[in-house]
Length: 254
Length: 208
Image (tube, rainbow over all chains, first blue to last red; front, side, top):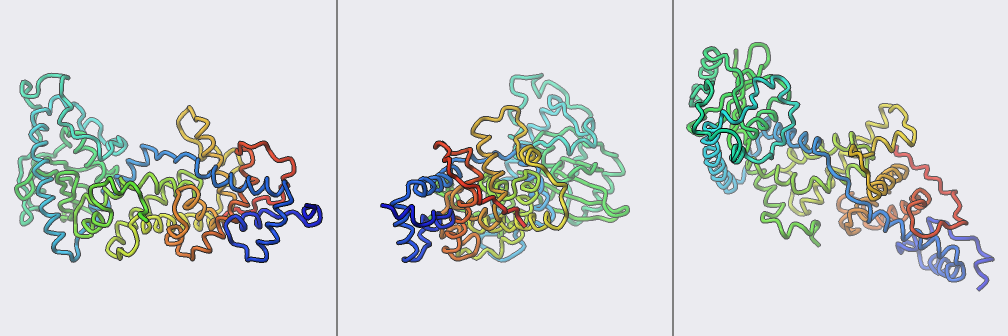
């Protein structure tokens, strides 16, 4: 076949369109005839097919641990600032409320370990101070229940350090007064926390030094109360439950 | 037909997770994020070519999805919807980048920016870098179509649903994108370099 010598070579766009079936009948016929007689264009057509192969074989770029943690924190903060479920679907809401209760139960189980193992979990927010947020503990880090296993003294044998927990059971109706009382009485340095709780606190504080972190109770269930400086003398209050779920976010005046 | 084949092994379907999120389940949305972020990250990084921008875009996208969840109608797959949000967030970044002049980066700097922080880049990783860098030199529309169809393996119809253009447009963008990429990926091809390949097709597709 000599047609190849007579007609101009097919450009890449035409070859790519041909492969994708985008040429109309006449164009496709002409291009096909040219290809049949032109090894060079056939070679380029094969190279075009290779482009798809190269793209398909490119490995998935890994997501960095740093960004992963940042994303978790951003979403936790969004959940806190704008809790889901302020809308319809009563059926689902009932379901999720039940689920939340179960999460709280599991948090209660973890809290027992926290108290007993307080001495073995040496990392305190107090000592890490304002560097807290830079710790980048992923929010999904495993719970601390197995942490003391085989290491350090047996939890129950060691008296807990001066326990800064207020023991308060915060209630909605008296929340502001309770927080002010605790703030005034304890001047609480953030206490020893499990990694899990600390990650949760970090996702809320986002680098702001908390005025109070109280692992206590809220409406009768285990909860962590986090107080950040608010506008003026106000306080920005976050209450988290199990799985770092945000139970409440509110502002109280100073 | 399913957008993500892995969803079969997941106990809770995406749509139900999203419904639970809308209904107030505080853990449902995070589960969706865990499930899809690797693929969404791949789309964002390949679209933008810069890890910093891709991080910002992906974070924006997930937060948008969080807030827009109630408006999800359920007639598309959740992944289609998520991809659309990610793609839009990337487009947003590109536009912003076009507005604020960036300190111009030479090719080496571009490669450094996309380079992994780990000290031991494998050959496979270098391949990925070259592909990502080459993608940045073709028009955005073609890049987005190729990422979904050729790289992520979605059907033309699915990519059309994500990008909200007709399937024929996706095909056309893919074809033209491949034609533009060919000279840029020349060094990656296994076949012996064709001596007669003209480089008239010199990219020209810096995103606008």
